[in-house]
Image (cartoon, rainbow, N blue to C red; front, side, top):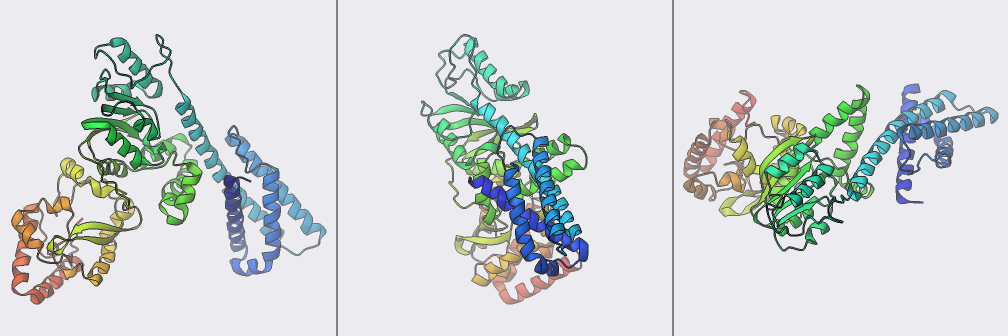
Length: 506
């Protein structure tokens, strides 16, 4: 029996268990007591359930099975189970509740139908991706066109037309216009690909290219950073990389538009759980990637651009085309090869500490993964707002906005206070980008002291970067004269502003 089938059986057992608890709760409100009474019949019930499911092909991986056939196999199997259990209860004169059994089957059928529908939906998308991967265009005047083969003349219209034809067969006219505007289709050092594996980049004949254009969306790449790193290694300095991604917001819009009202939100909820929550959890992440092989994953705009910056690119253009975000990235450096990106709920950020030591500041995640690499991009495109934070910062996720409002994200910084990297009151620990915005004089003075959990910002409430620097200089002047008194006074002034005046740093 294949691993995927075993996984489906395991999920089915959990579904039945959940359905039984819900049915028991609806019946009496005492699901635990009922389960103690029914545990042996429940085991028999599960055995009958799984056996029937296998017999009726509920776990079949037939790629041609459509949504209707999937639902039919589930309902057929579950009706058979209901008949068998009813038969056993009736002829064995058992006192078990028929209503409880029927309700369990009904609830389990509803849950399985929704899950089965999503499984088929995912298979359809994967099959479409497979078809595109196998597609190869045979130009009219050549037996085979190799987009990596040097083109003798930049003005060779025939070759450029063939490249345009290749792009159009996998994208659209709008995509072609975007790609052609930001690249030179007649350049001999143009690499045109439709791939999800880094091998097809690394195995190209030329050592360096001026342009790399990939016609596969990055959602289907298993190891995205390795793919970007391969592109970086094949580009000359200043070389251009063009690709596209379906962000999670675009995916949400597509799902909600595709299905009828009501059903669309149910499907989106399951999609959200399977595609955005399960891949982030340590216990389920490995299982998720084994099942999906990294295909059709959900990514935010912040994570996509952040990965590019971490791999040595800067984003010079982006545009929404046909429900996807197309981007143009220029090679500016070597990749950082980050083996430990901040992906989980508790993160450790690199910040400047005392004497220039880089310390790991603990916080709850409020931004999408890889957002820390996007500070230069955000600063260039959004600038600073009042209070020194970036305006319209799309890196912050929904949960992050809530945690920032109530300072929940900063609670883990008490770990840094406990281990001695920080103190209660002091200048804010800064990233390298923020730190380099400060004057040389203030940077030198900051490095003489530990950063603090409660910064002087909450005392003076500055609005601009210059005002923030003036506030910190004022605090450092006072602290260097009388450390204990200064921190004591600043703490209670900040406490008054935060609690009674509702001061926020956004």
